Amino acid sequence: MKIDLVPFSELLDEIVDNRGRTCPTADSGIPLIATNCIRNETLYPVFENIRYVSQATYSTWFKGHPKPGDIIFVNKGTPGRVCLVPDPVNFCVAQDMVAIRANQKKVYPKYLFAVLRSPEIQDQVEQMHVGTLIPHFKKGDFNKLLLPVHNWEIQKSIGDFYFNYSAKIELNRRMNRTLEAMAQALFKSWFVDFDPVMAKSEGRVPFGMSAETAALFPVELVEIDSEHFPLVPKGWKIGKVGDIGENVRRGILPDQIDPEMPYIGLEHMPRKNIALSEWGGAGDVTSNKFLFKKGEILFGKLHPYFHKVGVAAIDGVCSTDILIVNPKDPEYFGVLLGHLTSVDFINYVDAGSEGTKMPRTNWEMMARYPVAIPEERIANRFTGLVNPMVKKIHANIMEARTLASIRDALLPRLLSGEIRIKPKNSLTKAAQ
Image: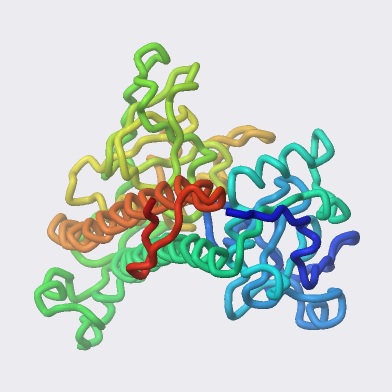
């Protein structure tokens, strides 16, 4: 099988390059993504730690904007990372990356995306970039990056294979974000805004709630002597996070750790997302760690404003910069998780963190956070709603990891011509 090696630059129809000067930003408007938003683990850019530009800046400052189906290519910091541009385009790009548009007379866009993600090309970029402290890959060197180009039929089969697997993984991630948002909205309604009690006190039926669940809530809010909760549902108590949760410390020495055990460090934990889908192996661990179990809450105590809180999808070991938290009573799992993931709680622990360059919180501080504690039957009902969501999130994580493993294992063999695609289902199958 003949496979041509073609310079990257010859496969492009256009390069949208807005680098070279700092883009003026605004407090709100159109999202401006940075290189941290481009990851080889996701199909499209993620919105994390983003800035914004005004409509006027969007219309006049930029040389051009990416179009659906373009590829975002990082030039500086983490050279070679690529993501697809979604439809519709809901962001703009400025420094340290470019948007590239495939020349469809020469290359199938999804194939180009898959090739750029392949280990061989990622290694080429790694070898070719310049700079030590901040590596960068010059746009002028695109002609030195040689990409394998098959005939159109094979390009399409490989590109569709890679895209379909990636799209299914992306769908699982979006589903997880939706499930988490539902749980957070329900928590806020029940335990922060007290919506069911407010509705009943006004003679209304609580919105979207069964009669059985509504009957669990009292019909009035009562005044109490508390600066944090001037009104709380009748029968509820005022307490602290430490009344419903506890910090679990299962220390383990490096020589006691199985090298095959999953390891979670702060670098594996996403921001504002309880789906802990990434982890490494414990084979390189050289310092003391903590043991955690599936279903336990992991809280990043270093730089708490990063908002790294999640629920473990597996058993493993974690960094000592991560606190393991469990409910004292399983019925309060949902309530505890709701508080620990709330913006109010993160702001509270951030304000009380110790240290300037490396601020940290601790369990003693976290445990003092004031909360309204519902009756056990209400907490149990909420946990009964949250647990299936968490289980589905974990199932989606494991499925996505399996799909990614299959996709990444087959891609080099497909590009080399060792195997061919036989399209038989929505994801396509690879066979000898």
